Length: 253
Image (cartoon, rainbow, N blue to C red; front, side):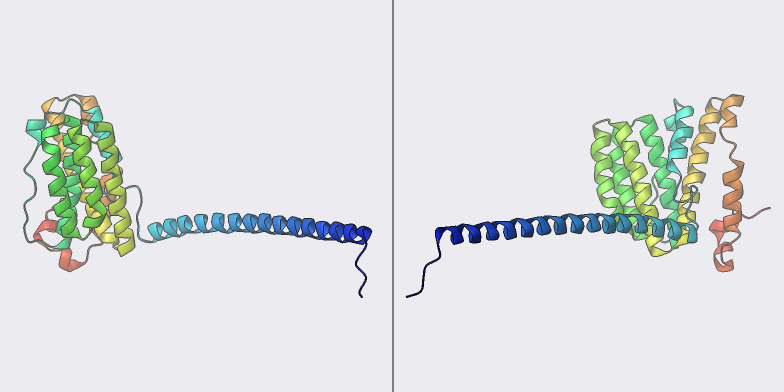
């Protein structure tokens, strides 16, 4: 008959197993910590790289503080000109007409500027219709999905009179449209949307200054850097586009 292990032997075996289990637990814990550390490094690297790539892509496509459109700058200008004579400055919403994509881009930019006017004048009754028109123009440009959620928020926030949040939503709309242009690698469209917004914003500001003139208010209209920038951009348009009636209006006399 085989001899059974003594109690002392059993105790040694249990001690040995306990030490082995503790070693394995330490090794396992260390492995988990190392894995987590490596994962954190990898995640950090992955988070930094897309930002670098986005910046490179933006620079490559000429996307800078002037493009698609500079709404924060227009907001700041209009706030300095308050109170705005809304009834004198408003215009009819753009109608659904058959025009080229470039023209649609400028219409969209101008419409964003009209949104600034509605916000600065705090016209709750116009916000819902503005959201619908903005959505229609966004679809015409192929960026409807980007603008849809912003359009709904604009309407809801405007009807509640939360104007600061409406401003932020308009800024977010601009950001999404800009990103859409980057993804489409459509530099010209980004610039034309920006140009449309700047021209309409300048028109609104000039009308406000004309309604209540002072040298200090008139000084706000001077934007030689932007004017020079867009003039240079228009010179890069292909001849077939530059000689259309829309863009011939901007040609030097």
